[in-house]
Length: 327
Ligand SMILES: NC(=O)c1ccc[n+]([C@@H]2O[C@H](COP(=O)([O-])OP(=O)(O)OC[C@H]3O[C@@H](n4cnc5c(N)ncnc54)[C@H](OP(=O)(O)O)[C@@H]3O)[C@@H](O)[C@H]2O)c1
Image (cartoon, rainbow, N blue to C red; front, top):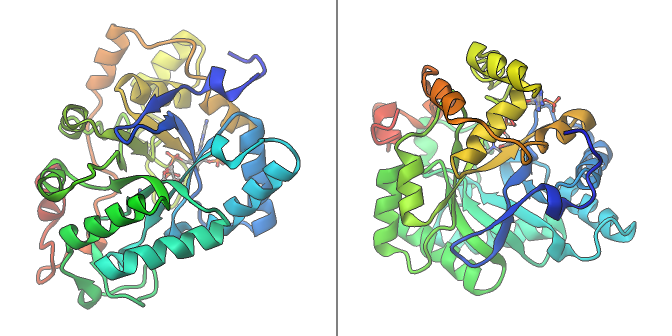
């Protein structure tokens, strides 16, 4: 469990997406608040690469694209990686750009910030469109516009055909919204990145995505422990604590391994060297059937309910509507 990581291939397995491209099953989350200075972020991302991380999850919203790009350039310069192809970089289309004609310029802007020629994965961040030009999260109900899934997805497909991103996908989409998308998609989404952890197990979405060949990626796999948007429901769960103690693992490792055993990928954020290491030591042991059954008993509650997108006169009139009843 504590041996030095020789190569990331040994430690972080990869899966093949429906696009034919490989993705390491654990990625480092690059969202944090407040944002550390760029140089500190660069050094954190380098630490992560030294520890074996090759998959990084950023977004226009997070404000970390530039620092991640600088870290990639530095990793190449110091020989930590030989080629950019060794990395898997995800970014996301923010809702103010969720319109057919704005997708390509938004992706080009993201690539410019990262200093890269292509992304590995570009996701629609939310099934929501916000008036272009609105300050990222400072929007009112009048700024929320009808979401044109057809036009937005067609533009994502064009980005893929131009070679600007190897795979395209979704984030925060329900079974119902994915079904609608699949009716018009000529390139199916490779990934759906959603809140998923032992406290919100996504019991409907997991089998649905599996059946459709879409890879689930879990965000807030530790319940965003210790953050302003987080919950203690994962890291302080008594069942997880007992399982962890009985196996000499940490609670975070049990929480992450559970996701892996569901056939999903993990996007976990730690900017602390020791915890980064700990979070990828989940591949040489497993949870038993009995332990998996115990985890099934954990009460379920969605942490991030998307209240900001819900208004009595808006596109989604209730949380039920936003999540198509999957709440
Ligand atoms: N698509 C979306 O809409 C969406 C939404 C939210 C998040 N995401 C992505 O998913 C990533 C992960 O989600 P998240 O950051 O919300 O939550 P998370 O990964 O579940 O939790 C992060 C928190 O847990 C702490 N932590 C990490 N490892 C730990 C360990 N071993 N023991 C104790 N505490 C630990 C971190 O602190 P330290 O850094 O101090 O270790 C941080 O406070 C984000 O960074 C982002 O890339 C996507």
